[in-house]
Image (cartoon, rainbow, N blue to C red; front, side):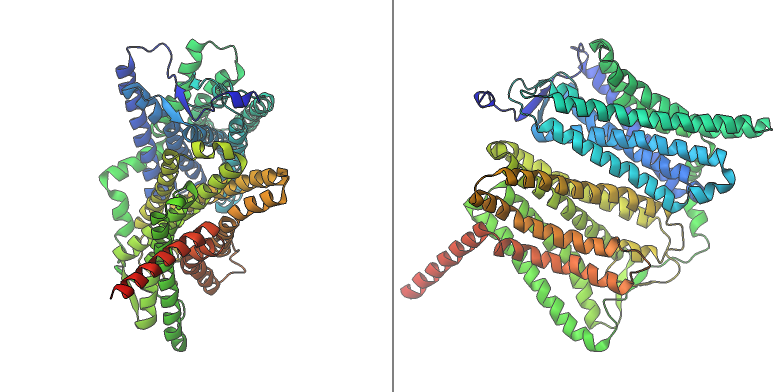
Length: 628
């Protein structure tokens, strides 16, 4: 009853950096320079490591992960802080604030865990040098890196969910320059004991465990170094750890001050936080560049253009590829052509029809159908990228595709498949808000929030596709030119490479953590909350109605993620390329056709809107025929 007498908060006001009145322009310039240096420095580290095969080692694999994290971590709070300083734009929506809290703790926790993994890497290199390549093999490094991303996403999901499950109905002024848990929780008008306890425990436990593991690693490293007989060996071993020790100190120092000193004055806490958010991500690439001979050498080679020349001088590069197609059996070519032509026609008609139906039906102008129209657009484009070229393979003897055409197909395929993953997650969040917070639905899922979510979906798709295709462009193709697939996909292309694909595999691993784990966890968390809310509904009719609004989305999620998992997560020992082609057909061609059918057959609103349109058209035709 007490909450109902208040106006529920739908946006927050960030009060910004305290005691900086009149200094906004100077601070904007300073922080802009820091942010640009962060982006440039970390991108240079990524390019240097990717382009030099000598740096394709576990140590630099983890350094690439760190550079990606530093770019993301700095980008969580700095752009909004700069907007605040430049134009005084202090307002942040509830959804924007949630995103900032999630990604701040997701990336911060990942960085903390990654420093621990890097310390273990140094421990293995110095304490067990003869077994180093066995201990830190490619699979082991991949599992360690993936583990940091997965654990952190789970950690951030718990903290964000607990923080924003609380009701906010009083003041909306956040006394900070970005959304963090404790400044936000202060504004809650409900019981915050559980949230504060779990937050203090998680935020304290993760850094403490990481710090103790790093400390244990370096105790072993120091003992191993002291046992070395030669001064040169001791100096060389110690030098490989100096950069890591420096960045660990810069990271854990501000964390320790902020979260272990509650009485730290307001004058000190903000500069310390700014140092951790803005300055540390800029210093990390500088430390690894200035103190690392290998990175400096790679950057010098990159500047003089030596790397690409060294890689390509003894090879003749491929200018065209041949797509093997779905099958080589002549008797199946014509039947398959007509089958997939029919499927593509249904896909185009179904998805275009869904977009047009939602556009012209006023009662479908809601967030749920806004996301559905976006999903239909993605499905239409996704199918169009792949199917026409596959159909050509059935009617031509050899299906050639140019190198440029292949890279273009790969790029747009990745854009739309990644976008579909995140769109399904956004739709799950929409269902969560509709069922768990029905009174706040229209406020939480406002037009602005929906637009930001859809924009974020496409940004994720473009970012992932650009990273994968950019890495593919550096791969040399000089062996065979026959792609054992019916379109240009990542793994069939990498099989043809005659240069190192280590970086491509690293990028696939890193982006898989974001583009598969984050949507999967979002969908899973949303449906856990939805299920718990539905089970609390007393009436059978209410439970049935709530379940029915989710059934179409659950069907679409199972069909898409199930077929994609069958393609990419099957062990190589039990899979074959033919099986991979069949599952690829399912999620690239069949799924885009099924989605509009699922949403039209299982959705009452869509069926009603379609009936109204058809009846109106029938009446129009009848009137015209009567007039004639």
